[in-house]
Amino acid sequence: MSSYILAPLAREDLREIWDRIAEDDFDSADRVLEDIRSAIVNLTKRPLMGHVRRDLAPPEYRFWPVYSYLIIYRPSTSPLEIVRVWHGAQRQPRLV
Image (cartoon, rainbow, N blue to C red):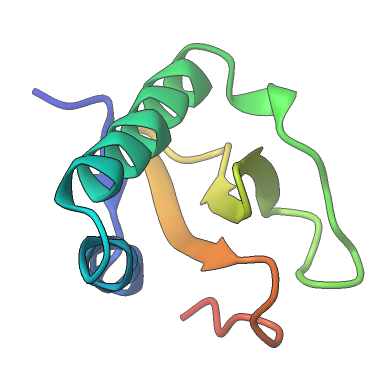
């Protein structure tokens, strides 16, 4: 059993990230998703290591960077809920 769940928007974000990168390089797309998933697994072990971004979301959400992406999650949930995986150049993410 996984120690995290991907919200529907996060699942969609990961598909879009892979699709966008894979247009140029399948191996890079796989590597980026693997690194994001590895970061998520690390967050399940230490969920408070992310940071609060009051400019983007209420304080119950935390953010963790991987490359140009931000993993947005709720550390108080069990299993850990990954809400979005958002590219930093995009406009403010919709969380639900």
